[in-house]
Image (cartoon, rainbow, N blue to C red; front, top):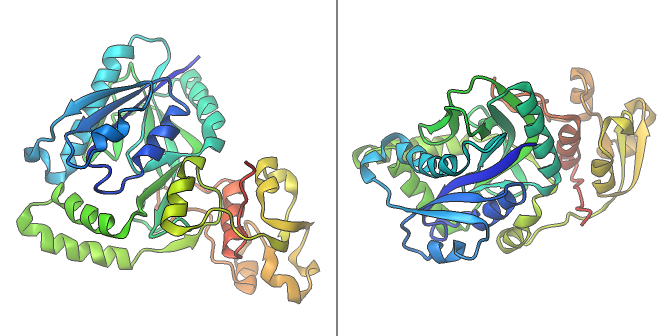
Length: 348
């Protein structure tokens, strides 16, 4: 049986309005213990994490000489990983699960995460990659263009040689990667306005010298303006409820009257169907059975070019990156419902 332990890094979580409490709570939902490399902060972050149970804190001081290219982030990540390995590298079937302070797991995926780690262990994989949802300027928009990574390694075998590298986006060298459909909810671009401005300004300093900052700030603004997004009215991790209400005063979408879905309900999980926020679902075999007055509530998952053009859907089957895997049926339907303004209502 797989043993799972968490590790992460953090510094000035309050100043930059990171969702670090939510991240740690979600990580604790699947891990026995968390190892945190906690950089010296100026905002009370140390006190904010002091009450977390089953967490070992490693106080650190960030080396400003390592800021170029974001190397300091992988250095801090590996500090936490090293302590975790010291404690559990010889523990049979031990894995480490890494989250950054703006990444949160969904409780609906806990069982899938555990079962996929068991499969990865059985298949001899040394790393597990998870799907990413990148929220952009709000909790109801997903960024999908090529800039955004669709999957990333977040779980590694502790008896492997894998380490964080670069700006801590991933781990290497992986010999065999298992790809999970469990999701990482990335909230790095949804924060309190002033904190977000400061964070964007300071994060660039981890990558570039002061003399090059104006150039990269202009490039960042250009990339921001080019961001392609899709509507998302699916559920969020329960750990995020208080934060989303604080930032957007939104949690449960308004219930709609009905929706017509081309296909069979057996394709989708019963959990997803139970959460669709409508009074009535009509499952149909062809869109032409729906009267034109109801086309605005018609969903055609996996539609070909002609139906997409005729009925106006712009939902792609995956993110724009060449590395992206097709979205699972449940998630594709969630996006198509969201496009019509139909959300998912949490069961609890």
